[in-house]
Image 1 (cartoon, rainbow, N blue to C red):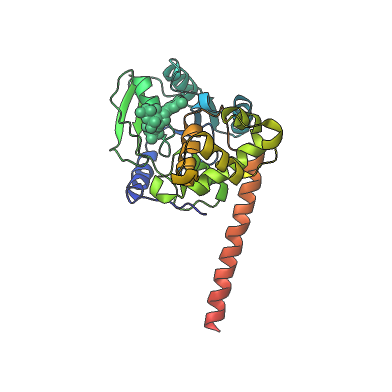
Image 2 (cartoon, rainbow, N blue to C red):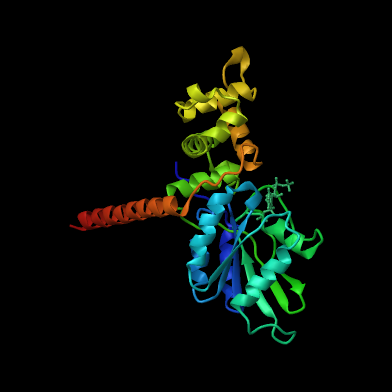
Length: 307
Ligand code: G4P
């Protein structure tokens, strides 16, 4: 299943970001630490190619700490890029963000020359919560339905530090199939754009391969028997354990899928990261190959039609 999600207002966001980026010194991208690559925006990478960048691996409290370390190392190897892992409970978030930004752009630290920063992130990465926490008051909009727009705001984090906030956006085409599933699992993609049962099965398949003990513990499954279960057997078990039943005791798979996704999103299964830098590199290569094949096939059809 390919998830393609591009609400109309995201066109507006792209325009606003393209315009704003011209007059900022630094671009901050807020990522979901559970899926750093899937939650990144390739379009933003393109638009901000000539600016210093700060990546924030947000919601680190929900992510696997070992894997967060791998991602931090990965981002640190990039030139012009710095990285921070944060979460909503971090009272030092503003201090850390300002200090890291100043290292990247040391020559703008005065009232006459404030550091101008654009902060972006796809929906649901926790950008509003982070901004609210840093401002110390609840004035940035927080919504639990992804994709809600708000007008651009200029936020004064310090007299010489201006933060431009933009509405969230996703990219027009998700070329890595797993990115679609991971975004679905995290809650970044609107409910009407995905099939929850398919997303839950993909999630369970990943968890049984990489986080089996957490899955077994959360759903009280016999370790030796459940070690051999496939994703559909897990969904069946979870349906029973979590009371997702229809009349006659049959499993309500839709409800079971919703329960697994909610458990994952709320961190009830444990601290989990759905991709490593190496896994991502493999998936990306596959996605790019597929794109190239589709392009070549399209071209061949065009040529055939003409001849
Ligand atoms: P956005 O602006 O990027 O779209 O995201 P937003 O701040 O609205 O956050 C999306 C959801 O993620 C919210 O939950 C929020 O509470 C939660 N969240 C944000 N930052 C963190 C974090 O660092 N750690 C954890 N564990 N959760 C975080 P919600 O269920 O949509 O709303 P609510 O629970 O706040 O009512």
